[in-house]
Image 1: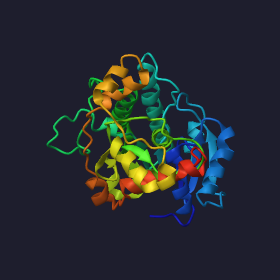
Image 2 (image 1 turned 90 degrees about the vertical axis):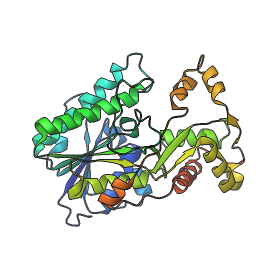
Image 3 (image 1 turned 135 degrees about the vertical axis):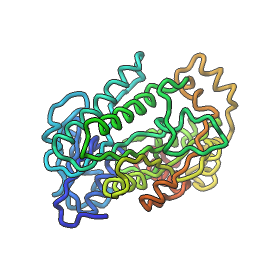
Image 4 (image 1 turned 30 degrees about the vertical axis):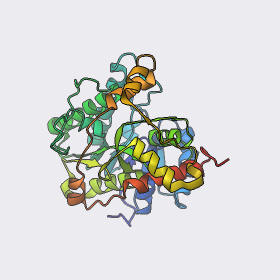
Amino acid sequence: MSSKDNNVTVLVTGGSGFVALHAISQLLNQGYRVRATLRSLSKQTEVTNALRHSGITALEHLQFVETDLSNDKNWDQAMQGCSYVLHIASPIHLQIPKDEKEMIRPAVDGTLRVLRAAKKAGVKRVVMTSNFGAVGYSHHDRTKIITEESWTNPDEKGLSAYNKSKVLAEQAAWTFIEKEGNPMELAVINPVGIFGKALNKNLSSGHELLKRILDGSMKAIPNMTISIVDVEDLADLHLRAMVHPDAAGQRFLALSGGVMTLPDIAAFLKSELGERGKSISTRRLPDWVVRMAALISPTDRNLVPQLGRYRDANNEKARQVLGWEPRSNEKALLGTADSLFAFHHLSIN
């Protein structure tokens, strides 16, 4: 799985993001030419510094284009000459909007904008990053494991605007491919919680969560269950789905396997990190306390729908079809912790 002749160009959208940086690094390592989209070209140095941190020294096969999912400017230029697109970018929302349409419309319209430009440019295949929220949030039969056959109902009670935007954007992508996409192909990756090694000081949501556990600001740990995927494995899965003949028209759940509760994660990190884990609390926060706190706290209100959420999912499709071999939950968590210390988000006093 490589392009040693440097004649294959891949467009990566959202090039400064946590997942995209790892995808770009792996593409360059495998000999591809890469064009990365940025909302502002002022981020070029940030991206190249992060790639050097990953071990990339020769950046002559990397280009940047300034684009935005919210308008058509420069998308034709971005797509020109590209064989593949890794559509990893998502619209940015610093706060949860009062009207969910403010999050949903840009996600759907942005996805269709990318697909239309890709089709126009003759792109062979688009690999789109969706999420687990588009797969498993309407799965209520706990006797059956969640697979790629499952779909979240966008009208599911308690579904966040973010997850609703993801499921509607993915549905729009599949509809476009069915009605207008031929001969362009689509594959979709549906990751769970993303953890692992950071390439710069920017904090992903997974890093933010572990930072709160590690620095002791989470005084008691909610009894939430999460699934985990390491960012390097997730990037690898995107690249596999990009070129494998059997990936066209398929969705792939991206998870290491098995679930962990936040209290289990806290206990694991405390036992493994020694002095670095001394601030970790292992006190459990009862569900009823979270529900009471949600009456006055927007942060806790967002936690309530996650209490008791069923997340037992299957990664066999990615393993069997694409030969994907992800690392363990524990290795992904330790990689996240190492990055928090390496970039001085945490220190040992």
